[in-house]
Structure formats: structure tokens, C-alpha cells
Length: 311
Image 1 (cartoon, rainbow, N blue to C red):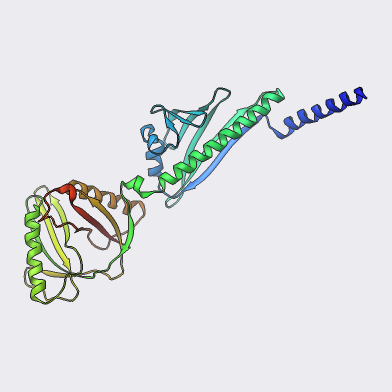
Image 2: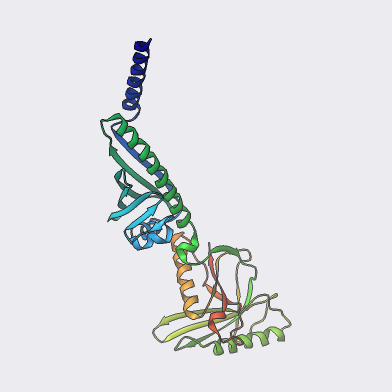
């Protein structure tokens, strides 16, 4: 009876060992794939610059080159044009991985994070390596998903919330001016007041906040256009004009708080967004002056909506 038990146990052990060799290959691989909706330039910005990792990393930042997630330490070894070489380690196992990206379509980038580890001939060690690799694969996939969530959020890329809005006010009474320096708000509101006088004179109503566009054509030349949306067509006097926008047309929109430098940066970011998404602008961008600058001197309190017509 004892011999039969020993024989049975021996056969079971042989079968288990055989299963380890059959089911677990000598080279154990990790191959995680994910597609993100963004540009390869944005992926490069946040993946191939180690100081940017702390902005999206889901775990602990140890240093610019070392990051921790769960029980694994991730060390950036080499930054290349389209991939990053990363060591993943815990006290029991160290593997060498490659995190790469490839643009596959307009605003579509495929991410791949892979590694291969040669396992031991010892069945126990081989099985343990297999378990460790599975845990690493799971964590690497979680990190990739966090990167996807981060990179697909416009607020992380453009430092503000960008949305598509519709043109609601199609008729705009406007006037313009050329100066040798960026206009002071006093001058802007003098133009706004002239427009308001004309609107009242023609028994029209304002349907939105004053609009402003400042375009620098050379070192000492600024072209200023100020407008106010109105509810009806106006016969403009000699020094004014009526602009028409396509009612229901698309515009990029964002809201910022601060002075001139903040709004300039917002315009630059919307221009970047437009190029990244292959959009075309049929008209000039403008800022909508939500806060009355003639009454509020603190630029930190100025609220401005930035609009960029697109199609």
C-alpha cells in the first residue's frame, strides 16, 4: 500500500514538473499593447522626458530616473526617439523592458511595453519566475492605463480645458485701431464705449460681452479690433463695420483668469490644439472680456473666454 502511495505521489510530481516545462516556456514574455488618442509629439513629451514622468506616474516618485509602483522599482536606463528602456525590479526578480510608441493614424498612437526573461531549468524557480512576471505584467498594464488617462486629458496637454462651442451671436459691430504698442485697457474701453453709443443710437441690444483681438504685425505695429455682438443688423458709421459669423459654426473655447500674459498663452495653446487636430480657422480668434477691466484693476481677477473659429 505504501509503495502504491509513493508511486502515486511520484507520478503526480512528475506530471506537475512536466506541466511546468510544457506550459511555461523557457523564455517568458510580457507584451502589453494599448492605443491612445493623441499625437506622437505629446507621447514623446511625457514619455521620453524623464522629468515629465512625475506628472502622470500612478505610484511614488523616487527620483527623476526611479519610480515605484506597488512592490516594483522602475528605473529609466535609456531615452530614445521612439522608446524608453526601463529596468523593472523587486527583491526576487529583475527584468529589462522596452516601452515604445508608434503613430498609426491621425491622433492615434500605439503603445507597446514588452520584455522577455529566460527562466531557470529548475521547475520551482521557473514557476516562481512565471508568477513574478505575471504580477509585473499586471502592474505595467495598470501604468499604461494611467498614462492613457493622463495623455487623453486636454487639461494635461494644453494646461487648460478646451471644448467645442457654437457661434450664438452672428452679428458684430466692430471698430479697429493701429498702435505702436500693446493697447492699454483704457484705450480698449474707449473703443468699446463708442460702439455702445452707436448701438444705443440705433436702438439695438448687446447680446454678449465685448470682443477683442490684438494682432502684432511687426515690432512696433499692433492692429486692434474691438467688437460687440448685437441682436440686429446695424448701419455702421464711417469708422465702424459689421462683421458676420456663421450662426451655429464651431469654435474652440476656453476660459482663463489673469492678465495679458495668461491670455496670450491661452491663444498659443489653442493654436497648438488646432494644429494637433488638423483644424482650419476661417476667421480670427478673439477674447471675450467677461470681467469689466475698466472697473477691475486687479488683473488676477480678470476672467476671459478665448474663442477660435474652426472647421
